[in-house]
Image 1 (cartoon, rainbow, N blue to C red):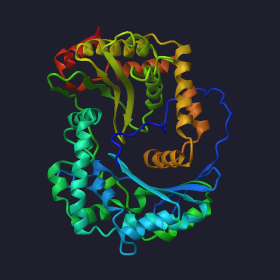
Image 2: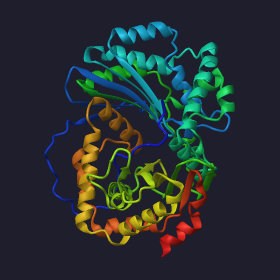
Image 3: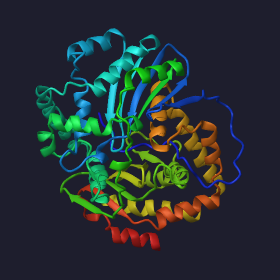
Length: 457
């Protein structure tokens, strides 16, 4: 499994004024973090219960690859469950089944994650399994050859998902000179040529103590998880990702892939966003909430629609739209993904531009407060269960270097003033450089230059 772009949860820094009173309706258990001498971090949040989620978050993904080995991080994910010197594939599957555990993994452009859902008394065994498949996979040549076909079939499925196509093309166009523009699966040539030595080299280079975090949530004790980290990950080579990190630079792109007779157009309209830790990120997350989403097939957005949804639900040719704000270490992408009939491309673009202008010049304090409350509610709803909490902690430690508690987050969101919000919206949306990626009968889609002109009017 892989994740093409990261979802935003929080940001680390912000330009703050005096914070508003914090709502104390829910008391969140403390997240305890310990950094071992090697740089390996351990984090836990005891939310109680008889089960736990335990996982390893690694600061490694497709953006740390090159032309020759692009796809290696994802290929490794496939190989992790094929067996180790201590566990054959069948015995691994049987062991996981016998202890009632559930293993999962995913790869994104910046991160790799392996985690287990298990009973509390099987925590030691689950961490043993995770460390074994991460660090000691057999990487048997026969298994490698077998997985090539599996990944190629996965690529075929991705190519049928036009949302995936749009975002892959968008990243390639916006970051043409950086590995951030690579696809996660990699090109066909690489999938067919990645060898055992490539996989071994990737693990040796990137699976280092300073790039890895062990996170446990549910019915866990911090001291026990620290002990397990020392026991199973104590032999990792030291190091972090600084030497392999190459900053990406946003470049405008206009990718209109014309496919005649397609009943719908699938596309994205974006400007450059900001990094995970940028001071403007929280304001952009609120902006994202105010833009909202709409899906005509499900009626989603009709009962509590955003201003943009109210306008576009009256245009029958528009099927759906979704605002998104994707962050990376040094940059980001913010905009709208949409599905429309070809004749509605211009209507969609004009409505989005009007919505951006509204956020930059007309939005009032009352509307801003609604956006803040919507964002806070959505963030709270996302953290339902030990697994999403575990994912949130792991992502935060990799992105911000620490876990930001809910009270601090709420203070930062409530501290955004109307003037500050408009300032950020004006800078990002009104002065941003337009990029587009669209697939379908695209002749009616305005060119970037036309869209840019609309922002200036």
